[in-house]
Image 1 (cartoon, rainbow, N blue to C red):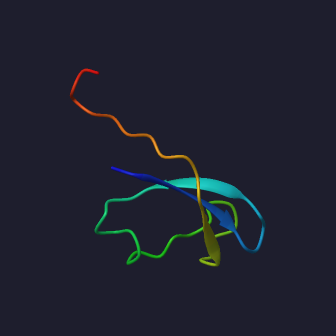
Image 2: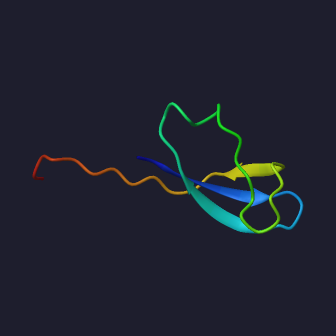
Length: 54
């Protein structure tokens, strides 16, 4: 399940949310510090794990 990074537009708190692909874009994300839904998604690094040996 992917993790998404957000920053609150009200209190500037950065936080991470674990969401399924179905939840992403449909479920409102709330800031854990102040509870507002005015949050912006941050673009971060991507990690890919495969089952194949390199």
